[in-house]
View 1 (cartoon, rainbow, N blue to C red):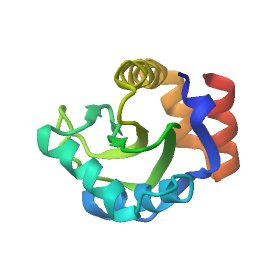
View 2: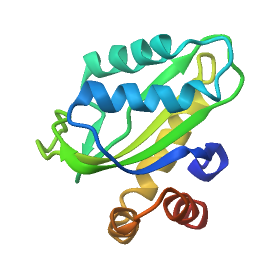
View 3: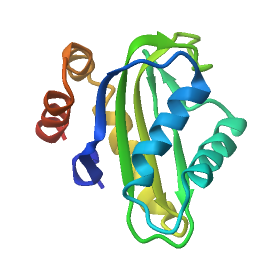
View 4: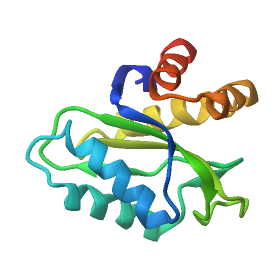
Length: 150
């Protein structure tokens, strides 16, 4: 599944003011909770934190792909946030992160989850796309860029 298929304008935010790993994960869950029925924001956060305990989802170059599983859900949800300032996210290259692409997938969709993560990682391995994402100044422009790129 492509990011463009599961990302909505209401889950796309540009230049969010956050100062910590926990705060960005909370913001991600706040946005995702709108699109997920029967799962509370706290449960979404717990899912992301559980995954982060296994190792940071900061993939390098200022990018992180936090992800978690949704019990009793049939649809995937994506959240894309850029931050005003890069924050420490324990990324594999020790760089601070300013682009967050979060993914929540149904618990029993393992292969779809892996394919979607792979597609997101491939999209954000393109330095041109990364530069364009960082240049976006508003939510709609950021959303439109992803729709065109993926």
